[in-house]
Image (cartoon, rainbow, N blue to C red; front, side, top):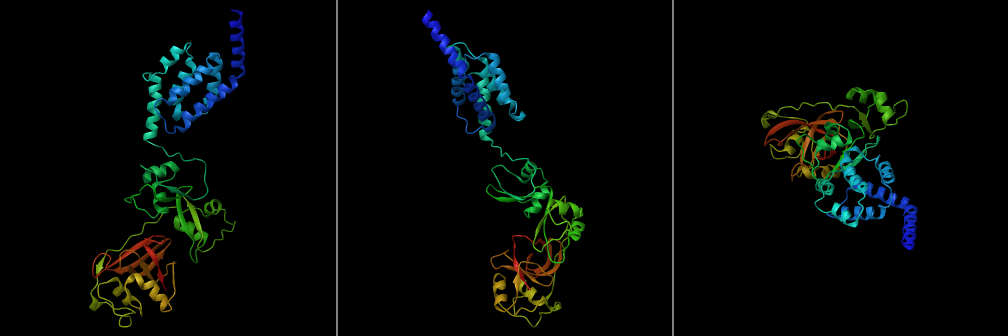
Length: 360
């Protein structure tokens, strides 16, 4: 009897000595289960929790509860249901091996809740996005089940902010793997162009110039460089009204290039532009940029009034004539976009993927 007493005493001392290690293990387990929820496997929780309880059953209920509560108090409120289930099992402290196995069988309602919650999380993954304040522009990769509205809400910005930054429309479709530009605040991006000042930009988007200066860490005098990209906090994109398409008869239409340009089939985009400007080269619209350079004409990526705009909107390419530039929008006239022989006027964002370049 004395020997048994001594063994129990020795075992009790060892358990007390290692109690801190056990409590640390309990805290780590709680953190992993409640925060990460990574790939739960049926039965995994019961094995881990059961082993933890077996090793810790010599500890007093009060010590266990106090330490576990302290470890879990920083968990998010959104995970409280999981923490409660784990804590209920950890602090129950069954007295016998039989009770331990019984309390963690597959029919245990607490364990069922734990497993169900973990499985739900696995089947419906959530992309956790830091809510720390940002000042820089980032790139976000679209995940499964994402949509523009949910992405905007995740980053705390408006839907229009996402649309404007990525040259999208409300009807645009995004797919997993697509990369989106995400601004740090609600607003838009502006690329500085020739003759623009910080006051002009602020007036155009109806915001305070000092806010633009402060947010972009510009010099106090607001000096900016051509081509520089600025974040415009709370900026609003101006609505551009497009002209209705009109049909133009060849007999009644003349321009600077009429009779001086190469001949192109009437009704095509190339024919129309060749009436607006002198075009000495030939070929489909898709070859105009290269052909113009071969003839000594300058080309570039900056729109200018009177320039030829080249786009990638068909296998043959497409060209138009730049009529106006307003902020980040370029308006141009064209033919054969809506139909053969039909002249139309439309507007594109200067950063549109459709634009290949300009011929000056």
